[in-house]
Image (cartoon, rainbow, N blue to C red):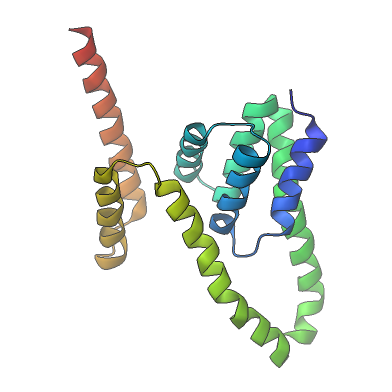
Length: 180
């Protein structure tokens, strides 16, 4: 059984050293909980990530809740969430206190512009990592979904609901077929 402080500090480290939001944190969470700590398996992480994307809230926080809960129940979920959000909360609080005075500073502006490409790379990394081992048909589904969202302006909410309904229907079909 994992210690609560170990869960907290693992997610605190992720929260402290990640820029770019929840999607940028996924690769660090994946590396920490699968490769480094060996708390969960890759397939289970993909399932948790799918669930984290399906519920309201930031994906990194949702993922930390599910991983923490799996490890130690409600206390593990609380430790993981606190570890994830405490660094960002503290940094944002400090920035809010001092940002008005440095908002128009050219160095601050240049720093934010310089971080943008790195943030994009941090978001693309988990997408490529999570797509490894997927059936080629699933990659076509990903491409089609992206086209529907970005190209045609469809709502991701409706696409998620449709995908969930199709997944449930497919599993029911497979279960019914196995009964025969």
